[in-house]
Figure 1 (spheres, rainbow, N blue to C red):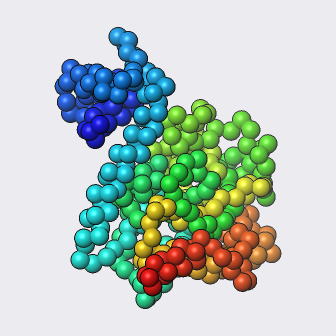
Figure 2 (cartoon, rainbow, N blue to C red):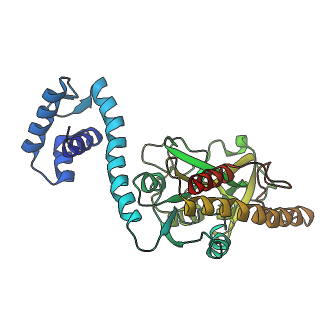
Length: 325
């Protein structure tokens, strides 16, 4: 099977329509139809069920779509990995969505710049839902993302910071004066949808800039990490949600084993430990003086005192062992 045929099939399978897939690929629809017929004859199975208005996948087609996406991503990643290896000066690319670093990235970059294994770091700010794609296709070397995530296949992660989640509402909202809220308090509220196919009736968010505007207009409320919630401004109120916390993690493809990446992940973990101490002190101050919005950022167990053996440490030790060999 040729990579071009596989790309054609994935386009048809994702669009569920030959005309839209042909437009996406920049080819004529009859040529695309013939290519799919040749692919089915070569494999000896039917991949697509066709009607005059609809295209659906057979069981074989579902399998090929899942594995085909992986194969195409691997090809792109192989190309970019080769380009990366051929650079005169090594470099790491870090990807995250806007505001997705919990304040960690600036001190992390400062510390890494003085590290013996430090290299130049490029920061890529991407759109919603793009982080894992850019990581898997080799555009980025490492990502900062929030856990839990529903799809981490092929990725390794290292927990960095865990912080409280906050409900963000206009000052006129019925819950704006509360010290905290529970899940039951949010029942019936309109919440944002972060993808077109996400459940609910709230507005679909395609750009983080929409969030503050829509909340201020009373079109929705949102539950956000504290580090994001307290920077929205515009006279909004942030209230802690009981029992809700989110974790910032570093993620990279699990086959990567190189010194610069290992050093960056380890430095990220060390910087997170230092930052969590500062945020923990601020949280305590906020609790003592009765501020309406608490400043939080407590780190998960295992980050205080003597550090546990983290994935960053294991990765760094593996790289060191390979280097010594």
